[in-house]
Amino acid sequence: MHVIGFAGYSGAGKTTLVERLIPVLKLHGQRVSVVKHAHHKFDIDHPGKDTFRHREAGAFEVVVASDKRLALIREFEQPAQLSVHHLLAELYSGVDWVLVEGFKHSDLLKIEVLRVTGAGEAARPARYVEDSFVVAIATDTPKALPEPTLRPVFDIDDAEGIGQWLLDNADRFEYKAEHHDPTR
Image (cartoon, rainbow, N blue to C red; front, side):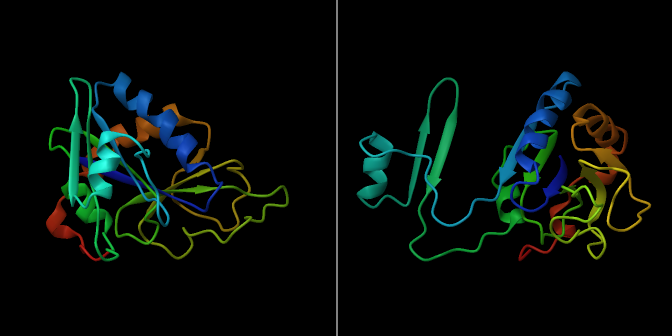
């Protein structure tokens, strides 16, 4: 499987870019999964539903499946700091691409999603200046980056161009778990 991260501050457009990139890759016959970093306590289940009731009763894991989907909900008794590598290990092995949203401090190769103000000054500090894992930049102002770079720079709305670049450079994004630090 191939893995690429999308890092940037909240509101930069990571989710929108990933959402647009999925159908681009699917048009090329690729099976795509997403790993998303969530903050604090989040829930995908709702009070009154059977799975919610099972979790509330103390189940460690609840798996619910139909002929169309499967969901696994796991409760941790103590806070657990799972790395992106732990989550990648949970995925179905028949996937072609995993798009990772968040995990900006991970040791995965990633595209920085960067919003730049009209004055050419980033609203928040650019990561690509110091993060060697940033291999490309998607921005709303490609000609006004805060620091020059030799990395590929894409317009944030160019999902087709980014998708083609990923496919053209797929070997670079082949994921080998043993080459990554599971604590990151």
